[in-house]
Image (cartoon, rainbow, N blue to C red; front, side):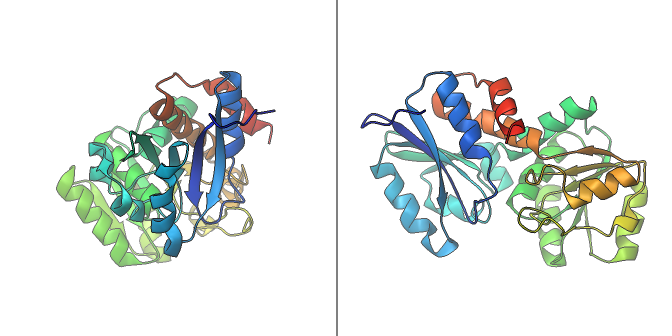
Length: 284
């Protein structure tokens, strides 16, 4: 049991909703393992209240916090500083607080890439990737894939204009490798004919909406590797459909751990107990 006193330092997760999150038990297990007087708490906050909440946090015992949907982009306007990579990505998922200064970082892209490479024993170099979504997580992952020399990144979003805007940002600021795709069966089928990897970066299929799927499963074929950043449920409807088609799959659990481990190190300057973090969420 975590002992809490006036010297306990606080970390947290800002988002809405947060009932699905595994981050609090994962981070608290890491703090306990290393005998740190810290606690990690979920903080549900709506977009309308985000500014007020962030302004109050530095006045308490906070060392920092994570940021999740739907705040990864809008959080930037309330920060004092932003890391260069997070600035390029245009989204933040980790904030440190040192001497009252709030600084934003992004570990989503690097956390995803590391989890994929460990699971599949290969890189994204010269691969064609089909990405569903164009929000904060998609920005981080797509920008990182561009930096990792992915050959072509197809970006598909319900609002086509957002896919176009993200593609233009990456093509202009990193390298010319992105193609926006309208969410129409025929156009998606054509893009997937060239792709080796699918990544769902949306919250479609996340608890409690477990029966939702972001893509018509008839578009899947066995040569694809299908990734879903949703980690609750551990096996989404998309991943189940992919397995039935004979696809290799990568769940969101490993990404959660690796981006969380990078957050832990930013807050503490200590190497995170990654195995403890993995074992904790596996037991949930």
